[in-house]
Amino acid sequence: MRITAARFNGEVSVCHCAMCRRWGGGIMAGFVAPADAVTVSGEVGRYASSDFSERAFCPRCGSSLWMRDHGGDYELSPGLFDGAADFPLVREVYADQAHRFAGFSGDHPRITRAEYEQTHPHVEGDA
Image (tube, rainbow, N blue to C red; front, side, top):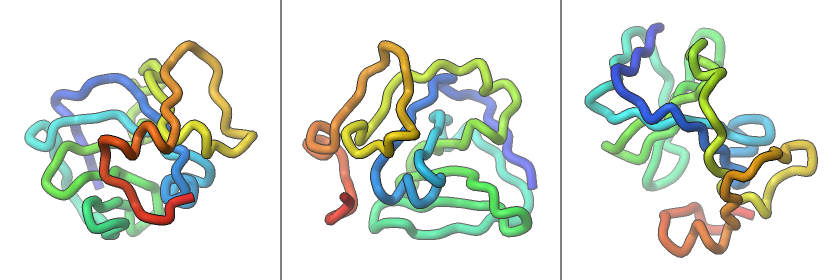
């Protein structure tokens, strides 16, 4: 399988919601690439993780590939791209839900569950 992104924001966000903690083993990290800039070839497993988004994985090795609101931009897993090692961490979402081992240092915004859910769709009961 191969994923390429012709354009992307080059900024990593991490999420600590319960769904992302389960998906990523503690956190989910991602960077945004517009749908029209992403090319995917090969087999991809898809999972409707909520009524508004899907998560994708490699059916051969199990690696997480992306999270995507239906029809929207891709939030790609940075570990898939060698160059992503230099992307800055720009925010933590559900920061008040983070496991103790998953704390990040730096001056980036730390958005709480309540703050995020005021303006974004979320999964009911995600605690």
